[in-house]
Length: 250
Image 1 (cartoon, rainbow, N blue to C red):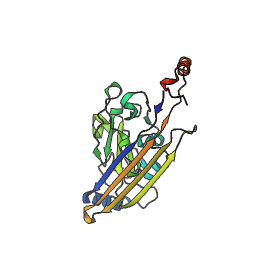
Image 2 (cartoon, rainbow, N blue to C red):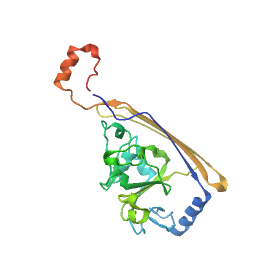
Image 3 (cartoon, helix red, strand yellow):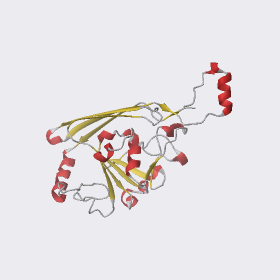
Image 4 (cartoon, helix red, strand yellow):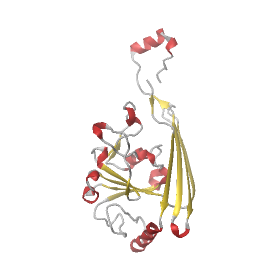
């Protein structure tokens, strides 16, 4: 039996930034002085445009694009799991659709108890019903290069956002920087299998006083790998019936 650890993926993501958002960012910058070391404007869990991660009423974890680039992985859900101690994502290769829409949970609660937002707006849930009927968004639909920063609110999230944020809020802030960026990586497992290729391209243009338009494309392809142990009766069957073309175990 062979398990697939990856699949061919083509993800497109675009972000349009309106002038109102740009003006809000400018006002926030003037009140919070983002040029100060370590100061980042946040928009999750607050209605004040001048809040930073140091003066919020509830703690907000901020994962920058530089922190995302430091994790060598082809999917964004695993990257978040490496950066957030309370965020867990499972790999279930023999669980039907959950092998592709991997269930992710915050603070050990159900996957559908975490509110996922994009630029402050609620993101649609996946059509797949997971374990116990949980219907959660697919976090791997976001190309890593398209994310400017990720803001995570855990304490008091349901009081501000409703019952769908019992576990917390994950807010993806998309990159709105004009210009051209490219990213590529290659990786494999220690047994020289599971070769994974990933390539990202991002291009953006400024629209004068109307904001900017940024488009990101990602391609990822992962080869098969297996760590299962072949049963003795299966080995005997393979030796007795070579015409069945049973693949050899790794």
